[in-house]
Image: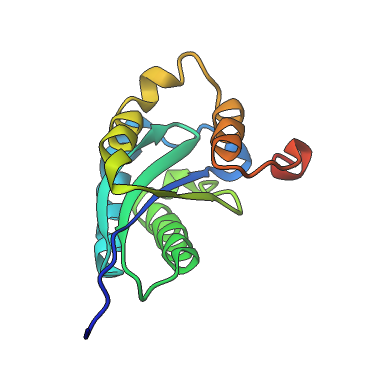
Length: 150
């Protein structure tokens, strides 16, 4: 059979540098569409994006011939550079090193999409650290909290 037939969805989470509240509503309105363009440039599809002032969640439909690490690296570096160029007052803007990326079954894509859409409401009750540690546990990635949030 020629070709590759894949269904690869990733829930990607990363925070701003030092988890500082750097994503204002005005920045968010332009940043998220820009990130969508970066994802498209990488020949993937952005299914959903949302977050709060200190982190972002993406649901990406990826390709079998590209590594998720490369996609995240490009999204973070290109968006950070763009923020510095377009919003000179945001000179301290940056993304934290590292990220979480979790595979999503096609049967759960709608659930993850709803979860991402509800981020602002969700974070009225739960902070980012608690959420991220819960995502790691949910996906069987037990790790040292101090190592993640140092």
